[in-house]
Image 1 (tube, rainbow, N blue to C red):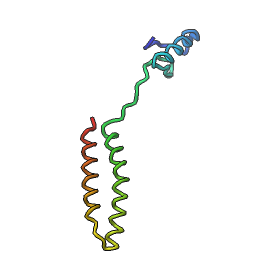
Image 2: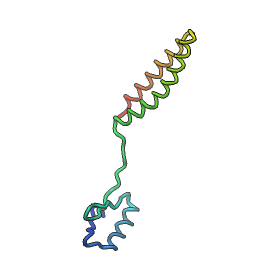
Image 3: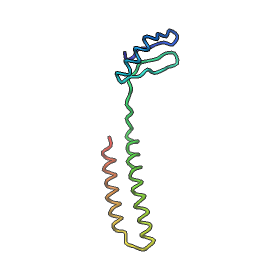
Image 4: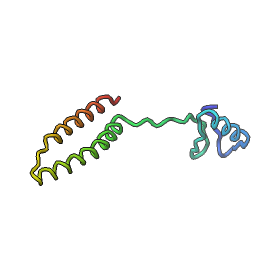
Amino acid sequence: MLGTIIYKNNFDAELYSNCALWANNNNAELVEREDCYVVQAITKYEPTKVEKIADIKKYYDARFETLDQALLRRRLANVPYDDLQAQFKKLNAEMVAKIKEVK
C-alpha cells in the first residue's frame, strides 16, 4: 500500500479507510497534499552530526560554568585553584572524546 494515491476530486472513502488501517499497523502515514492523499513510510528523525555536537557542547557548557564560578570565587578570595584547573582539563578531554565519537 505504500505509494497509494487517493485523489480528493475522486475520493474513495473505503480505500482511504483501508489505507489508514494499513498505515497504522505498518509504520506509515497518510500525507495530505493539495490534490490527494499519499501513503508514505514514517521516517524516523535522526539528528545531524552538527546537532549532536551542539548537544554535547551544551551539556558541557553547563558543567564548565560551574567551574568558572568556583574559579572566580577562589581567585577573589586569593585561594589556590590548581585542583579546578585539573578538573577543567579532565572535563575538556572528556568533551573532546565524546565529540570525536559522533558519527
